[in-house]
Amino acid sequence: MKRILVTGAGGYIGRHVVKELLDRGAEVIATDINVDNIDSRAIRRKFDIFSGNTNVYNELDCPDVVLHMAWKDGFIHNSNAHMEYLSKHYEFIKNMVEGGLKHIAVMGTMHEIGYYEGAIDENTLTNPTSMYGIAKDALRKSTQLLLKDKGVVLQWLRAYYIYGDDKRNNSIFAKIIVAEEEGKELFPFTTGKNKYDFITVDELAKQISACIMQDEINGIINCCTGVPMSLAEKVESFIKENKFNIKLNYGAFPDRPYDSPAVWGDSSKIKAICNKK
Image 1: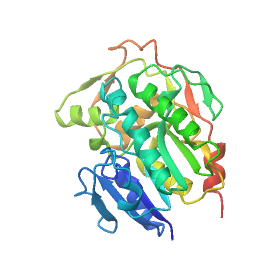
Image 2 (image 1 turned 180 degrees about the vertical axis):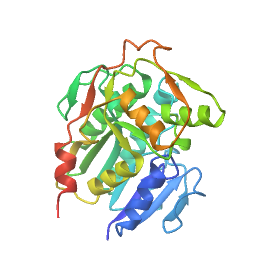
Image 3 (image 1 turned 135 degrees about the vertical axis):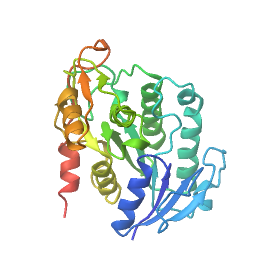
Image 4 (image 1 turned 90 degrees about the vertical axis):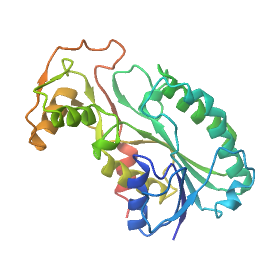
């Protein structure tokens, strides 16, 4: 049974991952600044991972695996917090490894890539266009350099467009729910032609858990469906599934020039992981 430390365990994705890992039989140490809403089967630890504590590996029970998901202002892509905390993320990972950690997985994002058309794989060049993407990209590169020739397993889990448990996120789906509850008839929308890789938070949790419960397939791993779908098709489906009355007001907003026309993840590695016996 693996002992897995999950940082950011009380967050939007973190709570689902903790539950999935527990369901798979892992021993989970769940840490965050607020641990009240985390699955009670986990060992819940309120802990400041950014304190610079050099003994953090021992103080958090010497885990077999660390899944580092903690990230401030993840929904605010140009928040100053991304650059302010970058060195603290690196320091936490460094202290964990120097304490004896042999397997670390870090939550990445497709926003590391920037403007791109087509399928993203582990060799796709990065050119991020937001502070969020820049910080994640810098953390990945610095962590890869830190761990070079150290014999430590590194998995960089690159997520795509997440939905589900929508009242807890800041996506278009959450905003549609609010507009529907307020009784609005129309929701201002773009043309909706852009295509993205949409994944539910529950499926994402399953993929993340499958990744870190093994250590044979590593490096950059896309946590995704591998199937592009237009924003219009996905949102119309969401409205229909929830039996909402609200309608989309197409063209109320112009399409943003920096949004990729069609971008999705290459799912070959995650499929290999999930199909392993």
